[in-house]
Image 1 (spheres, rainbow, N blue to C red):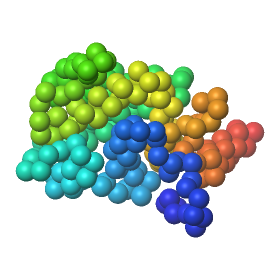
Image 2 (cartoon, helix red, strand yellow):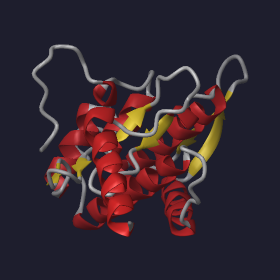
Image 3 (cartoon, rainbow, N blue to C red):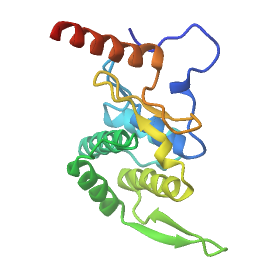
Image 4 (cartoon, rainbow, N blue to C red):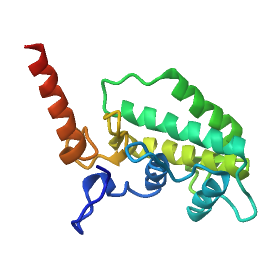
Length: 194
């Protein structure tokens, strides 16, 4: 079915997250599970993606091993975003992957002129770029916007979206597709039981 829309209005699951949190949302969505497209599948593609977002300096590039670690971090973030729905238990392996990425980036606290603390990687390269993503996560948690970034619970989707509902209760990235499919599946299961 894919994610193609005729309307010029931006669908809710395509609306950006606020500020730098959009970079994290976009990073998680570099793998479109439904269509099977990975926008950062190669070291060159990952390098370009990170550079376009100002996370990687010119002259730095990704290796295969760094590409693998980036993919692992992306999927760990997707798992953690599923937990932002509440009622989902985060896989401890996802947390371990985040911690390993933070260690590789050598995240440290830096203080601005107003003494406000912010995490920042002391390492460069791809590990530093991935550390900058984790620093954005930490900042979003402090601002209170992190809990609104979620991943769709549909196994064939898992798209990261920013929940703009008043009561933070959005479940599906797109009710018209993922939500409807889940309702139809549930209905069929109930019908087959009777």
